[in-house]
Image (cartoon, rainbow, N blue to C red):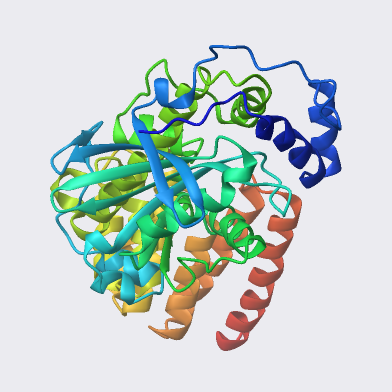
Length: 428
């Protein structure tokens, strides 16, 4: 193992690079921390400041663009992250359909790379760079995680080269909000260094949009750490550092050469990457086998029902809605599920079940159910008397319902048009 001294003049030069590369707002923040243009004002790095390789298990990789520090750890295939395995036993068939990418379902899991970056800021653009990149993939029976660290901005080409070498066997990325942030940021950095983008033709599964579909009605947050605690049953240790502190911890490291605060940043990044694998496995189990314990909350069944309906799997969607209605639900959530299921049964042509659900919702005072029953009797049974009855009851329900003014106006106008038409049919 070869160690590069942290007290070299290149460290001072890197501060100049940062000030000129970042956007003005970030540059102002750096100035408030004592970072100034030039190098003459800088104090010398304290002798004996702990280097990163003395705190984090890893070594120096030799790449075509120089050396880069890389930490590595491996998790056995049977490792549990909280209550979830890192690997699902089912193919990614439905996730592939949701992502609208058939390639996702055909690739072995060894072709997927799980990736997360820690950056100098959250604004993106050419002034933001990734100083720590965590990437992991399944190699034989292990989940192997590598973290590439840039001790100095001058090492960025080596960091990007090391990441490219690690990604070479892969054909797909898994990220959390990576389509909006991590991938564009890295593409910018590779382009600036005139280096081929290693994942330019990869499939990309971003877990954040799917997490929003599955848990937006049940959980108050869809942040990765929140999902870890409330879905995966995992709580991070005291090593964890808040994400918003990470850029400033790195800037302090560049200024002082003291790597001790960065141990928590490595931990944060490692947990983010590992959590992605566990979350993908859990999500896939939910979609592929929802009735075998992977789904336990009624709202999750309802969310899956909505997703399956949107994917065109109407029979499975109906079964999921029904399972959700069998679970304890709040009043509002219960009637949302009834509405979705009744509409779904109507699409499937199962009017007997749809009518049963509409009558159930009508008793609870839901305007839409009265209107649906009026439409059903007007157009399907041709029972004008029943259609007139349900249209009038719809008007009464709209007048009594606790609705915003615009919603009540909408319903009353629609019902008035329907009532006039049905009365004409009835000869009134």
